[in-house]
View 1 (cartoon, rainbow, N blue to C red):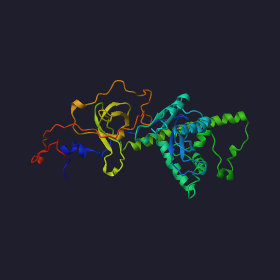
View 2 (view 1 turned 30 degrees about the vertical axis):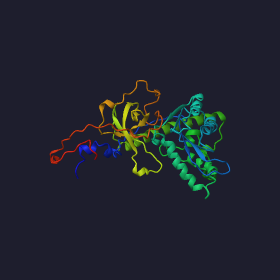
View 3 (view 1 turned 135 degrees about the vertical axis):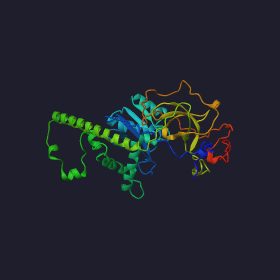
Length: 380
């Protein structure tokens, strides 16, 4: 099979829709205490019945993996903020960080004002990168599968079955921590039907005074947290080692041209016949190990994107149309250098960038192809 010639490689029409994506190495975010970092997301809609609920507000603690799910009638900002204050903040206290995607209910001024009043640091994912909130996304998958097993045929009792499903998740031993979420959050195991039937271990049935029980409880919690931190660290190293096998780091510099993954759904058009890549776009600045500030078009939006949404652009463009990065960019400098916690902006523009005219020149091919010449300005 003949190799791809230089004209095809640099042709914008042929290159549009790159296949070889540059997968960056895994970036880890380690937590060490309960309620240090909490991920939230919305699940639904579901059938509405007596209570009027249609959605589930999911909340998962990054350290203990303690899950919470609150049925809500709508996913507007006021409803979500009220459910978090009444359901989580009043029972478990304020988390240090609250992580979510770029949903309008989580990014509204009202929600940010609530976080400012409670001194909660609000972080968000980059556009089109749900892996940044992978813990909440993975729990949503588990919760959906568990609810599908217990709801009736008309699916009207999903909100009534939700507490029992949550109890099963809280009493299950997590593979990465080798502990249950209940032990790490409460310092004790929850009683289940099996424990009520068989009884508790003898050492836990001894009666202790209040002061002695409090000291033993604190010691047990400290040992459980240290045990979980050690196993979380080992599990994180194993996950990174397996993930980085497929990683191909390709750092970009300021001024580099790239394709941006931005799928579109247009009325009357098939998405299978439309390209999901927009470009050429220009990298303005590298703001993290795997996060870049990108100019979508010469007069378009500037967004923060994860590296796995970018691939190099090998087409030709005029040098005089390069975009200069402004000196006064608006970014929260206190954000850590992590792929799991990065500042995002609006969704990237889906308008195609007008391609400038390319200079016509002749490319000399290798000796075995000397019998013809290809003009890079021609359509492939």
